[in-house]
Length: 191
Image (cartoon, rainbow, N blue to C red; front, side):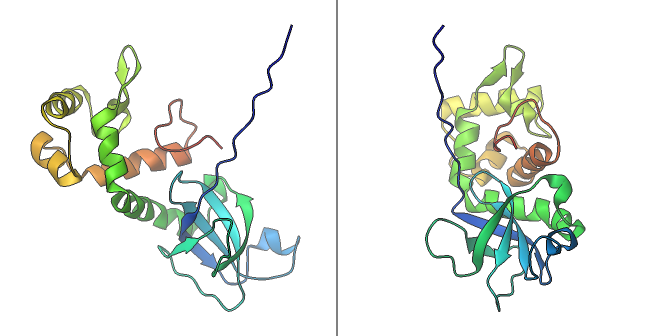
């Protein structure tokens, strides 16, 4: 029997937002390497939770957007690696939902296109129903309205379907995907 080897494509973030800045590092990491500031970050594209060593003399604040791509990084020296939700500091967890909402608002076109193209995930469940606050009633209103004319913005979606703040609802979904072991992932990659 022939076995096909599948290439696993590495997913990298180019930008991330600061969740917490630890000027003296994390106690568990201090034992493994010399002191130095680290930052807990969330990726802008895939909502990847990361820890990074910050360049000497750089001070970061929660919600700061930093470049973490492959080219020269002004604020970040190197990425330590991915971390889980449980490894976030208490401050990082407090900032998380607001930072996620900020990312969603900065990528509004991408998320509006999700509402315009979302499909069922099973014969009985639509991907729109996975968004907290959107049940069958709102799902059908969204589908009916997008068939008439695609949504152009969150404001257009709110006005035509009368749902509460779409960015906040999406942020709750992303937070759920990051903090729990979800069966269906709409916006994040599995850990």
